[in-house]
Amino acid sequence: MKRVKYLYSILIVSLLVGFVSCKKDNPEPTPEPSATTGTVKVKLDHKWGMNWDAFAMNTAYTHPMSAEEITFTKLKYYISNVKLKKTDGTWWSQPESYFLVEVGENTVPELSISGVPVGTYTDIEYTIGVDSTRNVSGSQTGALSTSNGMFWSWNSGYIFIKAEGTSPDSPSGAFEYHIGGFKDENNTNAIRVNTQSFGGELAVTGSNNPMIHFYVNAARFWHGGILLANVNTVHMPGANAITLADNFREAFIVHHIH
Image 1 (cartoon, helix red, strand yellow):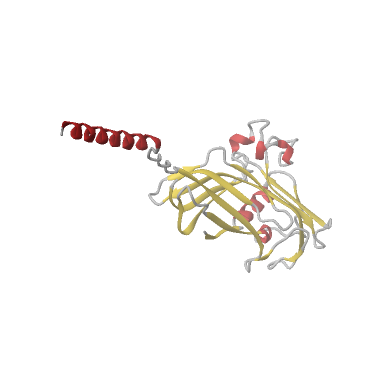
Image 2 (tube, one colour; image 1 turned 90 degrees about the horizontal axis):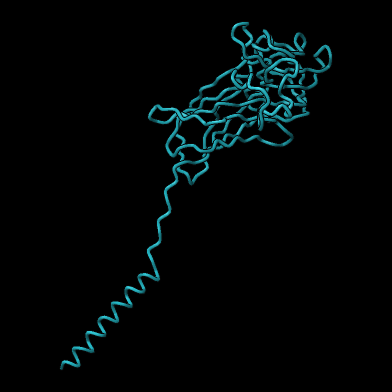
């Protein structure tokens, strides 16, 4: 009887050792940490006129207000200092937020806003141009590199918007708008800030890629106070640059989010 009890005890111990060994060989998987940030895409879909006609480089368009014929050969501009507003009313600002947008052939520019905290957002704020601090900070890199052709060599400061093209209605047959200027004291500040609602809630989960889809109306340059027949060249800060900056500010509309 004692022998049976002894053998039974050995069997129980062996089973327990085997169970513990299996537990060690097959440890519980460590759960993946939850994402704390995500990326929001911003699509800048360029259009012509308020009917949102398709827009492309090297294509002749008739302006819906002035009836002037206009063909773009270049359109570049800065978007900077992007902020997103949460549903609780607080704002998140993207650090080092400078993007050079260049409209090309058959392309739709996209910006990537990384490091956005997980949450739900309702509004976006952004600058068209480059803030005054960076205008006087000397040689820089990335989007702000002088090699991008968006810095005046004769005058410290960035060209915020560069729009060039041709038109039979221009006295020279062409137009060149190089829009910039950041000084308040002499009324040449062409920096413009937009704050726009999504008309809904944009959810950033860390595993999705939400997008803010803008329509950008390239015809807006001539929607107020400027005609190609009268102003076909702007190469310095001043009154015409201010008017063009005001006009282009109205080109941006949040069409939808997805």
